[in-house]
Image 1: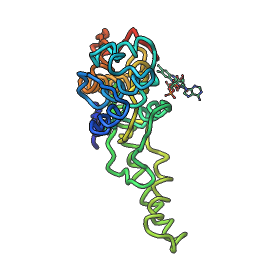
Image 2: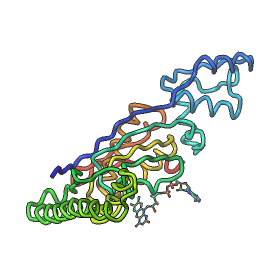
Image 3: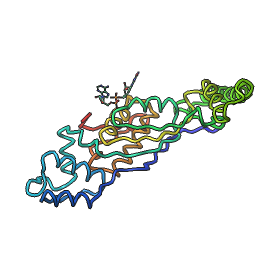
Length: 261
Ligand SMILES: Cc1cc2nc3c(=O)[nH]c(=O)nc-3n(C[C@H](O)[C@H](O)[C@H](O)COP(=O)(O)OP(=O)(O)OC[C@H]3O[C@@H](n4cnc5c(N)ncnc54)[C@H](O)[C@@H]3O)c2cc1C
């Protein structure tokens, strides 16, 4: 049985700007815009903010993209940050993690591995560090997970046979779904899941703030910090105000003076 203890966070998509069309807009408005913004997300958020007050040309004011967005964040003009979004695939995480994750609604989209369609007979399981560090507790955990896993495999097989008899006309895909959706009821919270998630900058900041906090659950805190680490490189003007501190157990926690913008 495969045991995992670390999440993987893959950044697979990001916002882009069509520079040619932006130039067309500026030409038609008979104005100019000078910026040193480099990434699509940072350029787009600056552009969106500037459209509010038409602060282009001689009304441009702040010239640096970083200064402009830092001011937007300090002013709590968070809706401007909703224009930039990123997509991630997260693997090596438990169903307890995903249950917490999907509570984040505003500005998020999710697509999660289906336990009705996908056979979990070779599922991996996510073990919390605090259990893995203690051999006696690890044995209890392993025994429980193995028992659930074995029950799932036997139930899936038994249900397949029963469904074949009971619903002979059902297409094979539906027969499998019927068996798996019932058998999964014995799978533990530790079962590994994979989830595709898309979120805008404002939503990601809220997530990092809530789930990167010291009192957040360790698995989701680890993911929040992995997201932050990616975002600080990806869009420093939008995520550069976070500090990471180390807690007494060596794990990290995120904090910013600009909360819930
Ligand atoms: C440490 C910790 C412990 C937790 N413990 C529990 C627990 O024991 N039980 C439990 O059920 N949950 C718990 N949660 C989850 C928590 O209650 C939230 O569901 C989760 O953090 C998502 O936050 P949110 O609703 O602010 O996020 P989002 O849904 O992403 O919303 C972001 C913001 O948008 C606004 N918003 C969104 N929807 C609405 C709306 N319908 N109406 C008005 N404004 C809206 C709010 O300002 C909200 O803060 C916990 C969270 C944390 C971080």
